[in-house]
Image (cartoon, rainbow, N blue to C red; front, side, top):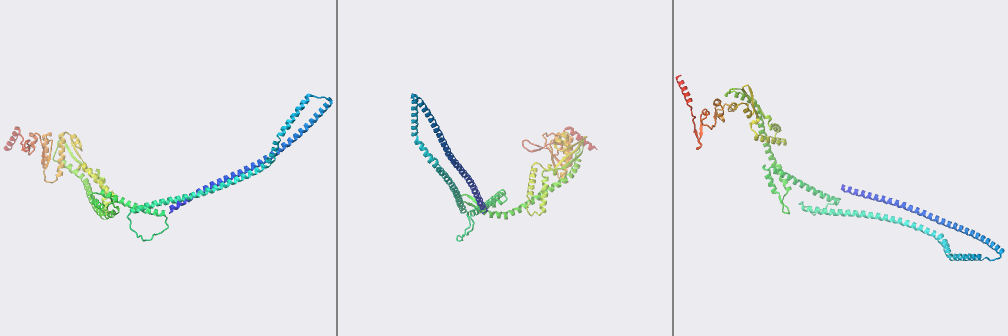
Amino acid sequence: VLSEYQHALKERKQRAKSQLETNQQAQKKLQSQFEMDRDDIKDQQREAVTEHSFHWQQLIADSDARLAQLDGEIKQAKASAAQDREEMAKWLENELNQRGLDVDEIGQLKKQVKSLKDAIYKTETQRHKVADYDRWYQTVFTGQKVTWQQGLTKARKALGEAERELNELQVQYRETRETLKTKQSELEKLLSVATEQLGQVDTLAKNLAKQTLPKVDTVAEWQHDELSITQRLSRAQALLKEREELLSDIRNYVERFDQLIAAQAGTGLSDTWERAREECAVINSHGVKGIDHRRMVGHLSQLLNVIVPQKIQGLREQGRIFGADLSQYYFVLADIDKRIVSQSRRISKEVDGELFLDGVSDSAVKIRSRISELEFWPELEHFRTLYDSWMEEGAHELPDDEYGQSMRRVLDILGRAALSGGISKLLDIELHLREGNSDLVIRTDRQLNESSSHGMAYLILCKFLLAFTRLLRGEADAVIHWPIDELGTLHQSNVKKIFDACQANNISVVGAFPNPESDVLKLFENRYLIDKVSKQLQVVQPKSSNLSSLIQARKAKQEVSA
């Protein structure tokens, strides 16, 4: 209503402004016409005054000229008469004096007589023109011209009045035309609005026909109010738009939950949701299968209010179990971190025993914990803090997103760590020993191989492995088997030291040799050979030399004699 009022007010202001501009233009035009008429009247007045002045001046000038002409003629006639009298007097005097006749003079007189007759004839023939001129001068110039000037003045005055009346009629015509145009424009607007409203009503009727609306009592009386058609249409369109928006919101929310539930495949929610979708499936008039999203709201409510809380309870319990396991894993690693220092001293003590090597002393093992340097350790500590906070709050609700993200990061890093390394990732082992006058620090296999000769490096490695084996076995009564390779590359005495140390620690050495006659085989209690044909084991006795037999016989004889 306010928008219509503002629109109507704007139109009235526009029309008033246009009418004001039209009136101002008409006023300017009338003012200009008034000035033009005033100038025309002044021009006519000046022209009439000038014409009258010129007319009377001409009359006065003609009268003066006529008077001057008459005066001249009178003077000329008087002069001619005087001259004639003088000539007549002279002639008479000569005639009287001479009394004779003159032929030339008679001819001259004849010519004069003829000239006078011609002049008299010419004057007589032009007399009617003089009479016409006198009549025109007396009647037209002096009488009718004034009448004509007065008639011209009256005609000009009538022309001015007619032009003013014409201008007034034109102004009235334009005003009437503008008024009719305004009414026509208003009627056209009303017709356009009515046509548009009719189209909107048809569209609304079609939209309402497509909707499934509750039935109303047709006998009920119509409620009349003061709402205009535009307001009713706006209200109906707003209600339909609101309904479409609500249906669109329902559809969007249902589709959103559809995507979220589809992403939770395997949780049981997707199966329940699919059954609900099948129950709410509909087929439209075109034969296309769709979903009644309004019916899905009830199933969604059942899902969110019943099934999801059960899932949340299970998820909360699962998060608590995972958190407890990761927290226990943290405490295990923390305990390992504390025990590594004490284990370093124990290993160093064990290394000093059993296998003594010539030129090698001050053997020790230093173990440094790398647990705090592990990639997942900061995340694991942060997760344990979040887990403790959640447990202190009672763990009645699901933890926040940070808890889940922290658990995900810890598990991802643990997965990568499990694939990329083992216990070696938790500590750094350094072997310290003194060979001759050199202090050696061994951290890698390469450093061990480069620290001394191949044989000595082999013995050093066995020395440290013996210590590790004793610590791992502890007090258990168990026989440990050592598979050892490359024994043939060592000196016989060093091999004997390895066997003696292993025998003292209840360790059985297992090896394979390509040469069945090797002297190292004497150190093995059991010796076997794999037959190439039968693929079976055969007991092998090493060949004894004569010198060895003589030495053993002599030792036995000395023992008997003793």
